[in-house]
Length: 219
Length: 219
DNA sequence: CTCGATAATATTATCGATAATATGATCGAT
DNA sequence: ATCGATCATATTATCGATAATATTATCGAG
Image (cartoon, rainbow over all chains, first blue to last red; front, side):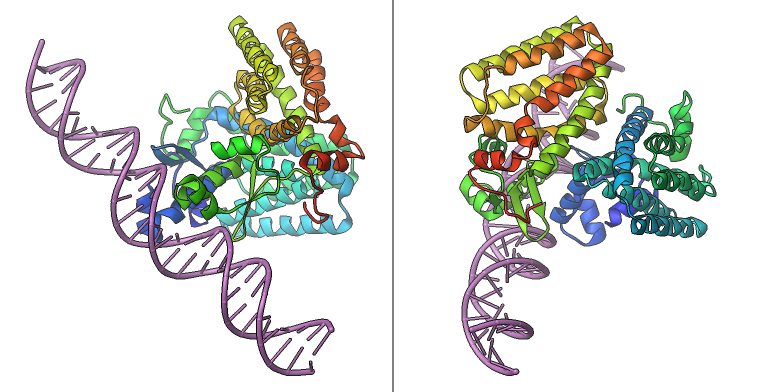
């Protein structure tokens, strides 16, 4: 769980090799425990493992980001549509509570907490869909994107002030239970944050964020 | 890898508890190796693990099947559309080769091989989409469905003779590069095999397949 | 000086054993 | 007799050490 935090905070930049025994000594645990953690993070998409070679912090190429953003939009629209049909007033209240938590985390410049709160907001919508498998897919697709954004923010490369307001149309659309509007707002919400990195210059912007260029053959 | 086969062949019915040390002794390997295998199968969706409790062969409730079939249709349509735009003649040839392998496996009543070949056919379409993440999601969603079908077949509960012909419209639609037709055929292909288990009587049919009823509170 | 084979090193994969935890049974109190 | 607490047992989680494998460095031949 600490590893997850380190990745989100950008303390372990994408591409960092994760040596099992090294991490084990570092945290005073066994290799088996580290191995276990790495396997779980691989499942979450934050770590990439190759058999007999080793593990590294997942590095998202512009192509990867594009793929994930597209899939997230597709799946989240579906989830939000289903959720709208099932959400009661208490669910909307919970959603607004989570948005408030997000606002507070942003207000105090806590990037890791902000990313988690952002994730928790969206996760709640997913859960309201009542579709368990859909939730799992969205976790898989989205978590590394949030890590990506979290790193951007911790490097000061993304404006934070607008984040809360950006979420309000989502709640409004869900409240209205208008499928067309839900699709529009969630499509927009899923893609807007990443637009700077999806254009021609995406590679350059991402490189600035991480302080290095991806090697030509990587991914 | 043997465990995977055992699940597909129905030798380990859904719900079977998988004790780490027991399996380790059975196959003359270490607990760590079994643990590793279970973790990978959990990732593939064939095994369900609960912390400090244990692992069982994943049991798909009718709801689970419904969720997965719906998501598979959604994702596979997207993959097939993208694939059609990129497939060359050699790709179509490969697809037909794989369909032939499937036909041979069915001809000799080898259920495990048939399920794998069926999977390999669809996997090739996914890969032609060029969208790596989409492939991963489809694996996750679909593999347990194929295991489900494989068990049905091994219990003689599904007709096999029509399987090959059912795949031909898919190839034709891809060849035609007609998005509308691709969507139609893949939607149909993804859902048709499961129709018997998606109706009111789904629970009963599934119970027949596995020889037992799901406990009321399961899932 | 370059290329290929071979040895040294580093890292993952596996092993056997121990510790931590949850489940089910036993006992006592009401 | 039933409910709650405690203990026994089974199972997973973790540990330290060894084996297998891949990468890198070294050496010798051309």
